[in-house]
Amino acid sequence: MAHNPACERFWPELSPYIDGELDPSSRVQLERHLSACSHCSALVDDFRAEGGLIRLGLDMAADEADFTGFAQNVLARVTPERPPFFERLRISFDEFFTHHRSMVLTSVATAAAVLLVGLPIFLLQGAPQGYAGETMELQAVRVAEEAHVQPVVLEAEAEEATIIWLVDQEGPRRHDDEDFQHHVLPGASGRDAPRPKGGEL
Amino acid sequence: MATDDLTLVKRVRTGDQRAFRTLVERYQRKVYAVALGMLKDREEAMDVSQEAFVKVHKYLDHFKGDSSFYTWLYRITTNICIDVLRKRKSAGGHAAEFDETIQVNLSEASAGTLGSRLGTNPQKSALRRELVEKIQAALEQVPEKHRTILLLREVEGMSYEELARTLEIPKGTVMSRLFHARAKVQKILSEYLELDESKVGIGSE
Image (spheres, rainbow over the protein chains, first blue to last red):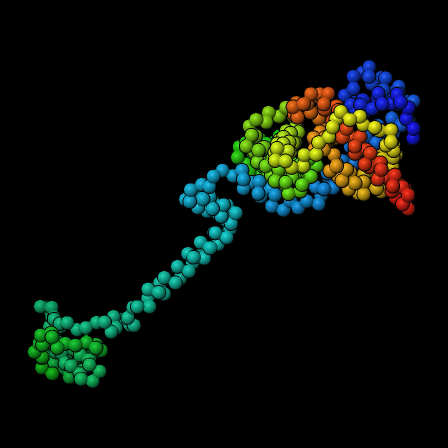
């Protein structure tokens, strides 16, 4: 494709022409030349095609890039200085309660139920078996002043038990067991208590 | 429906980091492409892209909304790239110079090969991937200052006035550099296509 020597005058104007930066009078002259010169027209086409290829090339290069962690890195750089420990703790709790509300509520309900059931069981584990069972010890035996009974305390060697007889002093004598009541307290010891005199048996 | 940029910017100003993340993810690819085009180094382009978003966040109050958010972001990116290129030059890096006084001879160029083979829409060309790779190689042979101005013009669409202001050079120099850059790339690609034409099938659409 031959060019005529007059073309060289127009070459520096080709670039501003395709960019729309040529003044109107120069533009008119160039367009007149272009209509007559296939060489310069072809150059204009090439320059335009270049622009498209450059843009496409950059798009394709960007497609090949790996942007994993890109936004994260940028955000890490723009985040203000680290807040104090308690502030971070507060934010962590806030975020946790915001994003895991249902899980927190379920956990609290479960913990409350475990406490309600488990605590009484745990506390009762140390309690004596039966009514004041093994921990009761006989200290003394007394009767009220107006009572008509007299206690008689006997010790049974077997089973280390203490037997207390209550004897009716004023009522009619009877030989059945109705007048007598007794208590057997296993493990009780009445040795230190003053021993009352027994009534008539 | 995606939230528009200005709404996201307002939310970022109130401290909404999630909105900022959305903006980053929306434009990270474009910003990287621009940086890569100017710097020709993937790792450096990635660093510059991150730096651009950090600056955007820092100076968000300076964004008045006169231009689109992307245009503003793009300017910040190109400014960082220009700084990097200046540092490279002062460090004695790739400082391939180009004598602009030398007359460009387009008479030998196979004018029209590129345009006629691609048509006006290079996306539809069967050659596009091959040509894109070739144009990347061609751009690497173009001096940095010409490559920068070509990218700013072709990708950003900056006017000559804006290019002159951004690069701090006279408008005449903008015109001259753009012409030299385009002529150089055109020559490299045309030579490639000329050689390639002899190969079977390539270029037939």
